[in-house]
Image 1 (cartoon, rainbow, N blue to C red):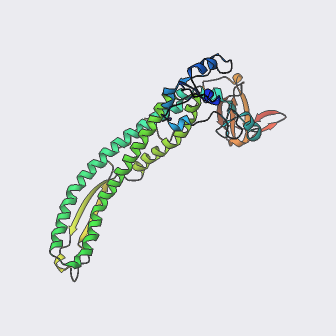
Image 2 (cartoon, rainbow, N blue to C red):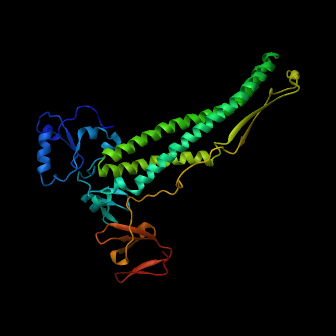
Image 3 (cartoon, helix red, strand yellow):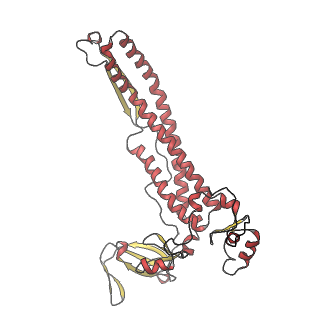
Length: 354
């Protein structure tokens, strides 16, 4: 969360005065005391900014609170979003790095639906699915651990009985078979350890998501969601790997003691064998949507007629036709399956299947 120490008014500090801040302006990235808030609210350039209380500001995770409104290269405020590079742009960024990019969107239009976006809803749903699946798998692994502990104890006792009849020559053989015996339990315990660790990490992300929805500005929500998306995908892949990789196959332990164990000093090279039988998992992954089918658009695209659209062909988008509205904001992208080319200043499409 944002620092819980005393927060001072940034405007007063610039005038060498120490005053406790009661408010924070995300747009200006500025802390404000009550008197300075009055001037801030009256000023034409800042009166429309969404000011929040310092108490709410402190609820923001550090990851979100540290999101800057200004370009680190040029010091100018971000005003646009480049769809091609998926990056924020200040006016100087567009001139130097994005002059030839198609689909430069107004940042104000992009972030205004961040808290109600399809992606946010999808991440919320996926996090719930991850928590549910981890809880389900934890229960299954604990049950499997309980089931193999009883036969493990039984076989351990048999091994120790045989061992008591033998001399020091059996020490090495005993260690070998005990290692095999505990291998299955160790594997399940290792899985449980990873699941507990991922549970804590997912809960942390859930708390961050909650703080974003309750306290973050639109820009913080937009960028925070983008950052969290990668982490969510990592845990989705982790859960999927448990089901796809055979890690959840049920284990059973069997042990067979050699009949000629009494001849161990001369003929027997092993106290016995440990065999682990695995069967199909008793749990099935539950999810409302296929995890791989991630929705990566922040904006819902309503149905439009061709009269509402402008079409631009951009080769850098891998043969995609970008459909833009008249104000330059993105409507949708259409993949092209055959060659399209521009001739005499007008876009012509030949044998293109949409």
